[in-house]
Image (tube, rainbow, N blue to C red):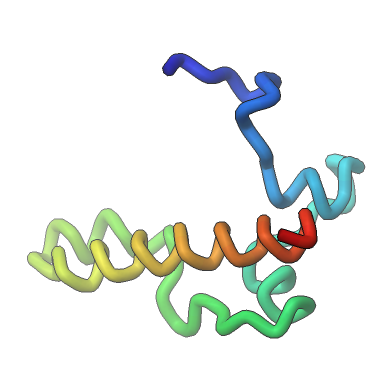
Length: 80
């Protein structure tokens, strides 16, 4: 599959919440709004350094949890 951002197979939860690109909201705020646990004290800006320092399990866990949070947000936005 070679989906593009404008394909119907792609759903951007940030844009689903607010299609106004000037009023985008981050994942942590969406998590808080929906009562989903947020990212905590680790975020995407730290991934490369942690990976380089050998904390691969921490990065893998972070990425997995990010996917799970995105899925939960999507389910709440679509009433699934």
